[in-house]
Image (cartoon, rainbow over all chains, first blue to last red; front, side, top):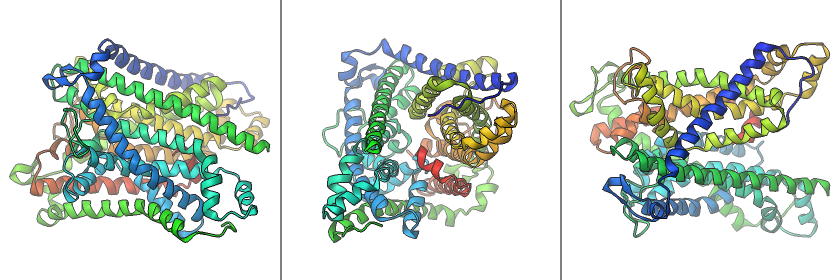
Amino acid sequence: MTYRKLPTKSGTLLTSLVWGCAGLIVCVSVAMLADILMSGVSQINWAFLTQPPSDSGRSGGIGPILVSTLLILFVCLCAVIPIGLGGAILLAEYLPSASALGRSFRATLEILSSIPSIVFGLFGNILFCDLLGLKFSILSGGLTLACMVLPIFIRSTEQSLQSISNTYRHGGAALGMNKTEVIFQILAPAALPGVTVGLLIGVGRALAETAALIFTSGYVDRMPSSLLDSGRSLSIHIYDLSMNVTGGDANAYATAFILIVLIVLINCFTVAMKDLWMRQRGDIECL
Amino acid sequence: MSPLSRNGATTLSFFVCGMTCVFIMLMMLLFIFDQSYGFLTSVGVERVFTDKAWIPDSGFYNFIPMMIGTLLVSVGAILIAAPIGLGVAIFCNFYGGGRAARFFEQLLALLAGVPSVVYGLWGLMAVTPIIYKVKPPGASLLAGILILALMIIPTVGIIAKESIRRVPSSLINGAAALGLPREKIIFYVVLPSARAGLYAAVTLALGRALGETMAVLMVTGNVVRIPTSIFDPIRTLAANIALEMAYAADVHRSALFASGLALMFLVIALVMMSSLFNPKEVMRDIS
């Protein structure tokens, strides 16, 4: 982010408006995050993290819900990583954006990534729950999320592949490598930080998702015994506690606390990765 | 594209991975259309507008109140979020200084990553009680607008910030050399040349607002009625799907899929519109 100093003296009205907007955002977001973190933190202890919920979530912990969330995430990543990497390599290395196929492919990704999550929920419900007979299960929830995360992951992986200087590719060719070898042995390691950033963004999106999961992974808050069991994610737990369970507010706040901490951690990690990526690219340019 | 020799099998596998996305998109259109077909033939589009009310159990399917609710809440949120997001974008580029700009970058990324249920939870616990004090019932169109605006400000802010950053320095320096004051530079030089990106920011944010489900569902009261004031409860199309999918059957279920289909087409149309403004490089940078 570069900041540009405007050389002439500033007017007062616009200055105060712009500072007002910025201040407003800071105040509201601090108020929101502080409210949730302060109300949630008092409930957090080891028992809360490990114990199963009781009395439909009013008391007890979120142990099984954490496990279900991680399993859903795991299923999602298992599907997204191989398919997404393949798709991104196809886009970056085989389909230049000028070609008709490349253009329509990119347009599809753009549309897919902006379709409302509730529509993904409907889709996952028919395809995975009904048609493939997976019922309400962690597997169908994870796969539905994978459909949502895939375009995001492909986009950012493609970007990091494209940002690699062509000298790498030419160097590989000069050594007599074929295209596959260049991709796996030269481009893949160089793109790794960028791919990680894409993956983290996808994980964040998947953790935050609720609407797509209600009709695919279900509401059951027991400890899942297999991937075919229904499992409740953290976000659905918050929704259920705050809307359908009277007196579940305290635990809803506590669960929101956990979710926000996870999101903040992922954000910090993303920033660190981005910095690493930039520095690496800087090194390349120095060469 | 490059002079490297290719390997058939790996090329094919990349191609399969890439085509998965196109396949998902096509399947989604196909399945959701297939599920809504029953509603479209047995009830028809016309009765969506002419039926006396939304009573799916007795076979009345008037979507008008929900369409109006969706539209009002989205447009209201855009009217609040667009100026504030733009203000933040201007602040980051010209007012705040490097450190503040970097801080805002992190803050907007964090706000964009906060799960919608968490916004909903905060809206339910903190915003609706305040509105209740002004005028009951609290859960209302106004609450929906405020929470949704908070949710889409990061979208508007990030894209607007990026497109303002891309305004060439030569334009700004030229304007400054002519002795224009700061606000004239911003209003007559910077904003007009960044307008493609700004339009795209608003259309994309509108698409996000139309499809948002959980946060809106939690704070708007979900009464199917055309609101007469900003303090009346409303129900949006997406919220309707989330609320009724659990028990809907036959034509009712098909009606919900039809509303999902309509929502999907609406968002696709918005995405296509935003790509008409052609801020290609901006789009690539933010996704």
